[in-house]
Each structure stands twice: as C-alpha cells, then as structure tokens.
Amino acid sequence: MSSVIAATRFSVLDRSRVREGHTAPEALRDTVDLAREAERLGYHRFWVAEHHGVPGVAGSAPTVLAAAVAGATRTIRVGTGGVMLPNHRPLVVAEQFGVLASLFPDRIDMGLGRSVGFTDGVRKALGRDKGDAEDFAGQLGELLGWFAGTSPTGVRARPSEGLTVPPFVLAMGEGADIAARAGLPMVIGDLRDRDRLRRGVDRYRERFRPSAWAEEPYVVISGTVAVAETPERARRLLVPEAWSMAYSRTHGTFPPLPPAERVESLAMSAKERGFYEAGLAGQLAGPEQEVERELEAVLKDTGAQEVLVTTSTHDRAALLDSYRRLAALAGLDDGATRR
Image (cartoon, rainbow, N blue to C red; front, side):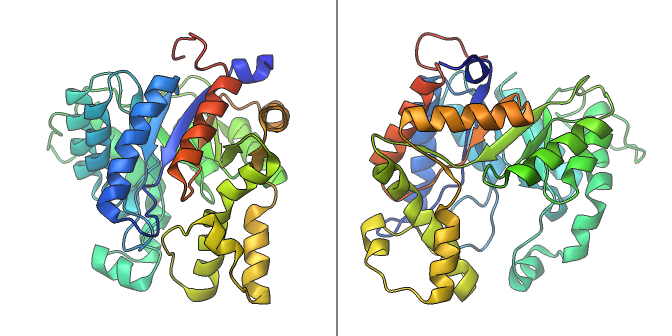
C-alpha cells in the first residue's frame, strides 16, 4: 500500500440519492445504513448534504439527517457537506449544531456551503435570491461568533456558546479565499479537473491565516471514487449518476438514478451523449491497482490530508462493495484506528 494513501484520511459524503423503483424515505434509510457500514469499515467521517426541491435527492434537512446518522453509529464523525448557509439564519444553524454537539460530543462536524436554491422557484420558497450568497463570508463570521459568544446583539446562542464544532468551508467559486481568510479547513472538488483542483488548493494555502479553529491549512479533496473487480464493472457504477447529470443539463430537472442496464439501452441525442460521456470521463474508477495509482497521484499533486468520497449509483450492493474495496486499499479495515 502507498505510504501517501496510508497517511490520508478517507471519509464519505452521501447525498441520499433516490433510485428508480424506490422512494425518498428509502433513500434516507439507505444513508443511515451506509453510515453504519462506513463506520465498520473505518472511514473517518460521514457527511450528508442539503438540496431542496430536487426529485432525485432526498437529503433536504442535513442537521436532522445527521442526528439520525449519529444516533445509529457510535464512533465515526458525523457532519454536513454541507449546510447552505445563505438559506438559513446563522443563529438557527448555530443552535442546530449546538444541539447535535451536545447530544454527540466530539463527533460533529459543521460543513458549510454558499449555494442558494438551484431554481427561481426553490429560491422563492426559501425566501432567498442569488444575491444572498454574496455575503457568505459575513454569514460565516456571524455563525462562528455565536459559538464564541461575540455576537453584538446581546442574545446568547443556547446550547452552542462555548462548544467547539469544527467548521469546514465548501470551496465553491471563491470559497477557497473565504476559507483561507477565516482560517478554516477547506473541502474542494472535483477530482477530474486536476489543474483547477491544484490551483484552488494552492490559492488556499498561499492565503491561509491561522485562527482559533485551525493553525495550519487543512485540505479535503472530494469526488467520485469507484472500485470494482474489473474496469467495466467500475464504469457501470458511474453510469446512473452520469446519465442523471446529462438529463438534468438537457431537460432542467435532476431525476432519480436509473439502473445502469437501462441507461446503456437508451437512445441519446448528440447533446445528451456529450454530457453523458463527459460525466464518465476522468473519474477515479477501476480495479484496486488502478485506483491506488490515481489516488496516489492526486494526493501527491495536492498534498491533501483527506479524501471525501461522494459516489452514488443505483446498485447498492455494488456501491457497498466499492466502499469495502476502497477501505481495504487504504488500509482502513486492517485493524487501523480511525485517525
């Protein structure tokens, strides 16, 4: 096993993707089941996401789902990847994470993003507009202030004040600069565009300012990793998500994940085919030896301390097998303690 990979933390972000033939409640229960398996395999963290009004995603209330995941596990760190801060009042977010951290001490992470709803209808329902993301740095500072007890309003956040809930910034757009200025760990993807990934990491490290939350830069790289017995089986793991992304870009809606065999029998337009093939290209997918080689290269290139795996597919058995193979490749299931 590569010494670079052995020194790296591996974690899981699950978006509670709805599968064709299954329901959104089933997708949420699948997430909790996957968290139990990730803990058993030795993954470091298990995070859940926030999406609103998306037919193919059940994860809309990440702090609620994080509570279910933390309650179903014992040792793995649990958090959000992330709570979209412009959608919420910082005080409410602080209170929610304060409750989580009080119920599950030393296990909760606070991953934070700056996106607002993907469509005008969702933004209207949330009472937000695109401009609300522009003050993410200010919202972030206000949120952290509730934990530090420095809010100028005289209001105290209960039970959050005085608690330490590690914050992470999802580096979308200018997120790398915001994470660096705030002195916070950064999560950045995707693994396919190595030049863009490296530029973002370099920019973050160059501009990082030590803080009470982090004395040194901490980089989490995020993306799909699919491990299977053969290249063909690994590629099939990618097919449902690649098709759903292609469909969303050509039809304006993000559908549930279809079975790979149905996608492979579809007639696609040239535009759909282009998006679909682009979704399959450049992913970290293949047998163990090939994935290990690619992982080692991207870790050496970025110097990242952690990999957050975001793989989604229709075939749950194949997905679980992929996570097991990755855990073995990284030495997570050979008796190593969670680092």
